[in-house]
Amino acid sequence: MSDSSPTIEFRSDVTVELVRSAAQDADVLFAARVSTQGEQTLDHIDDDPTRSKGLINYLMRDRHGCFDSDTEVLTMDGWRKWPEVDGTEMFMTLSSEGKIEYQRASRVIHKPYSGPMIRLQMAQVDLLVTPDHQLLAKRRRQPHHEKYEFVPARDLLDASHRLVMGGGEWPIKSVPSIRAGVMAVLGFFIGDGHVSKSTPSFRLRKQREILFLRENVQRAGFELTFDGRDRYHLRADETFRLWAKKCYTEDGAKQVPDELLSVPADQLEELLSGLMHSDGSVGKTGKMTYSTTSEKLAGQLQEIAVKTGRAAVVADHPFDNDPAHMGSKPRYRVTIYRPRNMAPRIGWTRQARESQVQVQPYTGDVHCVTVPNGTLYVRRGGKPTWSGNSPFEHNSMTFYVQAPIFVFREFMRHRIASYNEESGRYRELRPVFYVPAKERKLVQEGKPGAYVFVEGTKEQYVVVDEATRDACTQAYAAYQRMLDAGVAREVARGVLPVATYSSMYVTLNARSLMNFLSLRTKRDDSTFPSYPQREIEMVAEQMEAYWADLMPLTYASFNANGRVSP
Image (cartoon, rainbow, N blue to C red):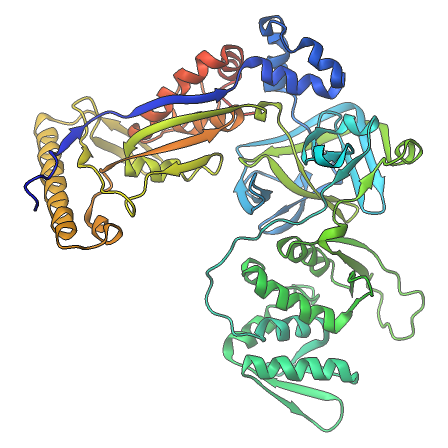
């Protein structure tokens, strides 16, 4: 170890500094009033927010845009009607960076409602939402001023907009290897195949279908045999045969095996190609259509479409006495739109707006959930769109945080913020380590899920203190030996413990911060009690203190309403 090695430091605290903010109570009021006052809101931007604290309380408690009971939301388990949502689902969301992510809800809303609703209805759009519900939309302005943002549904009554039917980056990259051609063959099997004595088989006459199947069977490394008539039998590996058996629902309808909806986008493209070469067609403009009697498969095609950067609409497709059709099952047509056609114009003229955007009376239950990304993928009448809500998102705070690495690993489980952490690949990490203070409770009592921490004995504290200091000192000495020997920092850092201090900048809005505080602080006045690790609670407490000064009315309302994020 070098003679100039820095002195090892041990700490028992964390550092949190507010380095930049654009967050005040007036931001919440401004975002909320835009929906009812439009540009006139600017006349009140400097008003005293204390005169409107009742509005903030209302927003915190009740103002959450909601859907009617016929709307469905896309979850990791497929489409689910809102009355069936119980909060255990993983919901498809769209991050601010445009990435598709599945997230759990921090709040579930099912409540009675009697009042006006906004109905959006045209060839590619069907929504029935409360007037304050936030839609991901772009108002028609001069081209260089246009941008997608959250817009209250009521705004569409007065101005033309574009909505977002689909698209997004499906960021899944690493899955068990699937050979080229395999997913294409499976997609073709879903459309035109069946299982005969455990063997995937096809009955084909069209030359284009036969050529497509032969080409992709060869790419996949399988074999295709012909029985001399019009039947083809596939000799595939055990994994493919298992998938083929999973391509049927309990009532015998076709489906994509659930686990294959989570493969990377390029493999979903192959699956879609196989489906389209069986029961699909592609028009001259590139618009794709697919026909199926499986309602579940039709919904899965919408999921595949959005994960491959597209959007799909499902509609009834009657057979009209087609002699080739046997049985009485209904049929569905799935229309898949290219990215350039996924932003339908609604209310583009005053006359169109009168028919496409209407106010309707409604009495019944309304529904929604709160997710960290603030967005959901929903459909009504088979027509999907990205949607979102929250007037508490029109603000921003950036914090500088110093804490042990294990705190950051807990922090970054919250996909509600932007993070930028110092890197041990590019700089030599400082010898600063965390050791619990004497006030830190050391002993866990009770079973997992129902335990408490209590004070440790003097002897236990001595063991923790000495063992932590010894382990960290030895680890840093090993780290220095490797650096002195010319080993790369990214390799040498592997010996350092999670008690090593790191630093990061974290940027988030008030709604996201409320979600973080509700989960990472232990308070008796919380509607939903939480039991965080003490070290991350120390960070949360300091962030909360800064936020309380920035937005005192919103902070007071947060506490008055059980510390539940809106």
